[in-house]
Image (cartoon, rainbow, N blue to C red; front, side, top):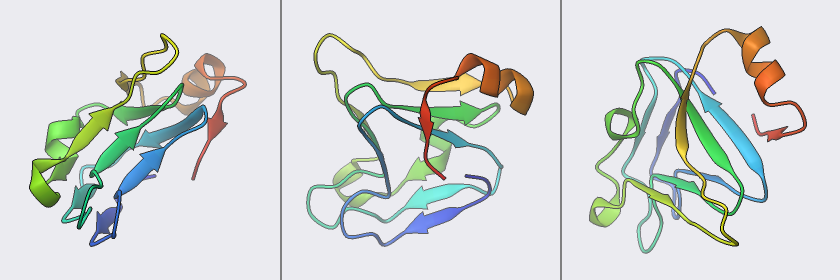
Length: 104
């Protein structure tokens, strides 16, 4: 996902689950005003992860979501998911994450 604006979603702005992987790039990326009740701007669950290409940070791209719930990492089965920085080099990225499901 590159330079996307995700806003006004009823629940999560961007949720990744079931071992999914989302790579976020682009300084124009914003995730805001999502989750009217109990959602989050960014949500990663189970063995899933959201990778942010430098210089992006979760604090930079996910702001002003309902109730201040801008991001959440859920830990289950002793697997911690994270918002991981990564290189924008796509070849290196693909080699590091073989076998992972990437959601576009």
